[in-house]
Image 1 (tube, rainbow, N blue to C red):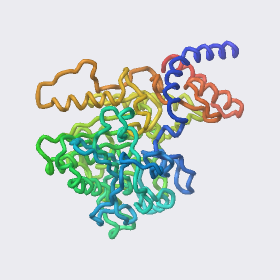
Image 2: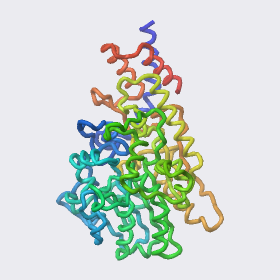
Image 3: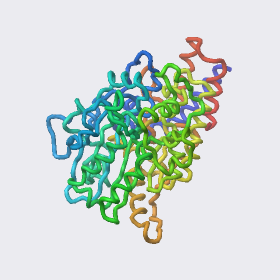
Image 4: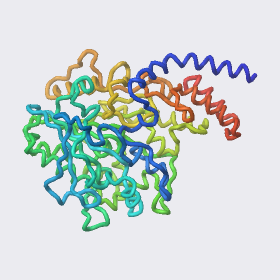
Length: 487
């Protein structure tokens, strides 16, 4: 019987392999995606005593900068395509440690299109967690060590082959140094740390006036992970400010990448020690510490003690008036971590697999009424500033094409709506199980580092766990049976 079972598994693998190989070919165009592909520009940190690894990684894979071309100083061959650092002229608008906040900009002379990108990086929500963050990720709390220039990638790239429709925009990258999911409004003089995320955004836009934003026709506020959540809670205020400064014809839009989180159903809630908090509890504690500024229309929907719900996409979206485009992996690895599911799938059980599928269904449901969506059924986190962002498709369309279609639809919003042939921007994968999209980033065996299909990974884990006697009896067999049957 065991031999028959193994043969069935191998046959199933052969059926799945062609689809996976197509996805793996996509992944091979970049260097070793693996865990690095989950969050461009950051790496997995070492565990800090007293702070859980799950909470260090939430909303962003890590707090520590690495060698991403976007997040480190440019090489010696600097070009005019680099984004240059400008510290704010208003020195009262600061990072956590009191150093002046700032932004990077690459100007496109003659262009009246702008994109302002908010960086991500989780948050801190108590003196203890902020102290740890400052020790281990100072660049996310201080401008003192920021490089003088950065190279844009993905949607911030100035290369037409990498960014075919938006390569010639005025590109602004706003580093995240407020640790408050871009919501804070409190200075250092009133606290151990300053939390001025919402103020930084407003001040950056004001200081872009001499750069030409006053003549803008379109302004896109974009962000990834915590930056994406920052777009949700700041977009309508930004739209009001931009519309005050510019012509009536300006169009303000939001682009939310991997910042559309669901309230946890399975995550632990433990804030007793002040260090290890589930997402909701961290936001609740942080909102008080940061003196968080939330969208007024969203706040009006809730009692004061429940205003934290505005940080969740499905809750904030219903009160928003500015158009947004949501980019969201259906099996976002940070959402899984919130649910206490580690995305390397070690010691996976059938119950955890069911929870993963449930999360995917809930995300699909939450995005159903959002007109502009790009949601691949993949395990990953963040997309729009990845240099390989054009590789991924939903229903045969890339995100770049979907954004172009969305842009055209908004330009025609004052006239009769017309459908452009083959131009769609509500794209949600409807395949049957996680990571079933053939363009998904390649998965890697946690032991060997080799590229594998999802089924191969589970099968290898099953063998290894049986050797160690660590597999709950029957769980892996049930899980593999569900996967073979399409979930």
